[in-house]
Length: 237
Image (cartoon, rainbow, N blue to C red):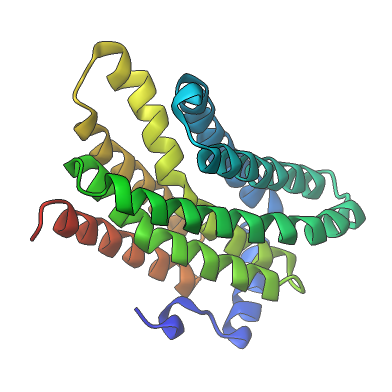
């Protein structure tokens, strides 16, 4: 998928943001980002605690940086909610450093997991191949968010799309922990509820925005393509 499909040109973005401001106050983005952040934390923290003793140093390092990134995002969202823009801007510079560490630790961990776990089961192939598409999209969307700090709504829009790309791993762990693990159900089948809910969330965001943003449409198309790709990899099509 070309970057031109994902990218909203500056003139269109400026017009779109002005058009959407009255219908979509900043609270729209605040609520969505809080919901996504909490879902990710609720999925990862119990899973991390239960597996703590069996995890490697790379896992612990990645978990620490990931928590800092998600917690930092929630703090940033809260600062915007209370209109503490100066604090938000200062923390933003620190968040860029955390973002870089998060990206590097994730790529390093993915490389290790691909080598050791990719061929162990279908569910690993499904999850890892989905992440193989979504994580580069996260990086691209965060890059766009950094470029659009001149417009609070455009900045928040790209942050929201980026956060959505991180949702499936945390949401999947939450679904597994609540509905599969307690009943000793097969771990393979938490994948479908995870991708369906994530797709519905992206669709809901786009529908609320009245599909004014090309990037939201592209995000949904990209996600659907990533799911199809994951099944192709998972089952060797």
